[in-house]
Image (cartoon, rainbow over all chains, first blue to last red; front, side):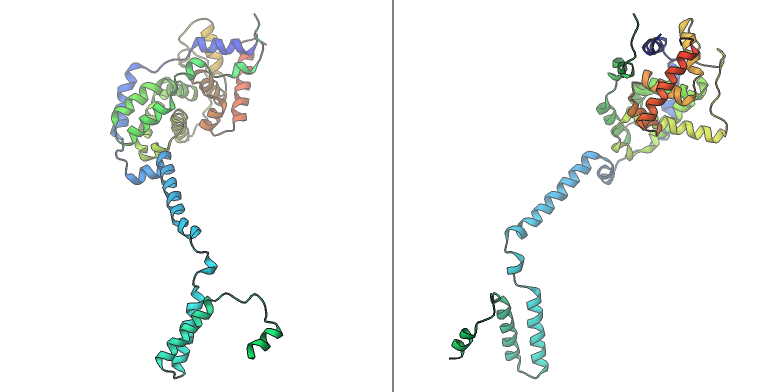
Length: 134
Length: 191
């Protein structure tokens, strides 16, 4: 005799069913302990569908937040905070040195203008320096 | 006609498997979590038989099995919102039942394995002839093996699902089943 017949015979022999009168007491006992109410936070935390929706929303917001940064001016061409800090420091130093406020402001503006200019590609040659001093 | 030993002998019973409807069960669990008591009755009607058979495989007494089923449903009713996250309701219900059985065994602090031969004491002894032999043989199995046989043959669970229910690997569940069938064959004098 092989394995399959035993399995088939076991299925045919079957197992006892619960007594019909078990249903009432079981449900009564369970209902007396039942918890009710699902909050919105519960749905988000426990429901896969809600979690996926929350993740999708988060990703959508993240993408929308990044789009202006990606499509806008590259970071290295935007006014840098370092230049602004330097300008403020220069302005403050000029004031402490006793310069009038309008001259301190002018100095700060020159620092900002200098910072916004592209950096020289290379050191000027000697000919260029001589030409500059003529 | 002799039947060869093939993987087909491990296939879930189509008739039992067809009764599983996870989507419907998840919907019922969601309703139960929201406080719909009617969902509890529907869950009982859909799963009580399978849970009772599982309980019989673990307990050795019909009244103990009924107590286990009741404990499982009471526990189910108290869970609340986490029911919303259940992906495999049938396995989940059987895990609850098994946890209830473990609690009972701990409280009794007794050896859970008590093989029983007598018709009067064991619930699997009502029929005659071959069925009596089979049920007696099944009753003589170690409970972990008997549990796998009952879940697989009568509950329609795959070995992966049984592993999930019993906290063992798929391989271990299948191994227990194979050992159980071998032992049944020995007990029935078929080898």
